[in-house]
Image 1 (spheres, one colour):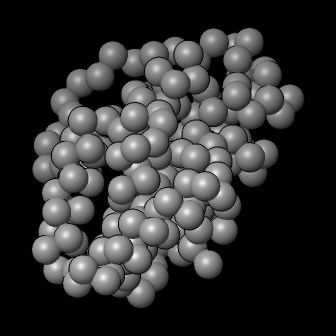
Image 2 (cartoon, helix red, strand yellow; image 1 turned 180 degrees about the vertical axis):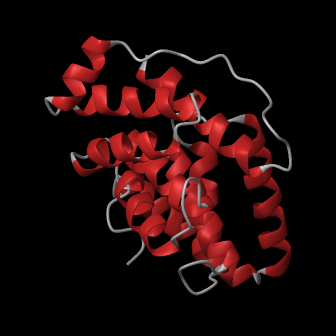
Image 3 (cartoon, helix red, strand yellow; image 1 turned 135 degrees about the horizontal axis):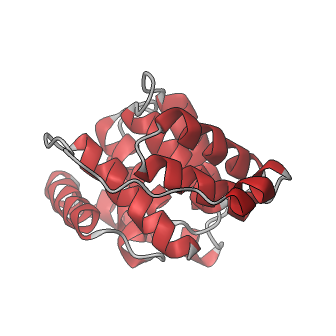
Length: 192
């Protein structure tokens, strides 16, 4: 269930960044038992309440519960909180906060956070623009789990192609070696 809610929340975040207005969504009630567990500190319940709040377009509540889950090390909460900061959903964007939470989730192997980091490095948002690190993170995102939503896969593939055209053979080899080293280190300290 956690994976399905994560995918739903990711799709909503990515859809909200597109020039399309979501006219009507079926509101999904959050059951009282899950809220009670979330209030007692259960990170999976906190994530669940955050994801349902996001699905209901209650961004303030979603952020609150994703932050609670994220602070307890929940990769899904960290990743979705990072995406909300990255895209400024519910408040002004904050690339430094996005970077912080993407890195925490990325260290747990979260492919969506790998994609987010790759995007930040490719765009130079919150970090110096860095084609090598962008390539590393984007390539990891395409090979990771959970799999990226189709639109993110397409964007990551397009960004990788663009980066590849702009990189020297030496830069490309370095990026590929960094991706392999990161994978071998189980995603620990890959940005150092």
